[in-house]
Length: 210
Image (cartoon, rainbow, N blue to C red; front, side, top):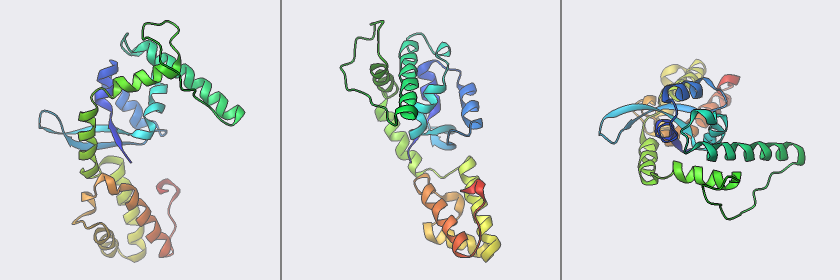
């Protein structure tokens, strides 16, 4: 799973950063994590990150009137085409996106598929920097809701085999001194491991931890 820092995208689109971060954290449709990372100034900071697979879904929820003027027609065109794609998916069973040459940005008839491409190009204009961030995030220990989920699953396993043994099993599996050191790249594997252990010892995984 790859994570995308929300703050740089908000800054690029001219969005109110704190409002968007609060919205994402409170919306169950999005998988967010608070991840500690080294910023460009060399200082260690926590930042809200969004699952890369959900980036376009988030863009669809943004009010075009709240972004800067230069980005507004592109975002609006993308959202209009996404609306059509959703309709086609649920009524016809599929949605297609023909590969057409993008019109000029100043064209008032700018179509959604070209707008989406340009929006993504704008968001990826700092691609090298984001690549470095993603590499750091892979090794950064899980935090926030992710860490809470790992802890909750570990506690469930502890009720079955004893808490010391539960965390020993977990730490040995991932080569850790503490479950708090689990890197982001191992998060999904850790969830699956704990769920499997709970079931194999005769327990049940609560719905909220599935």
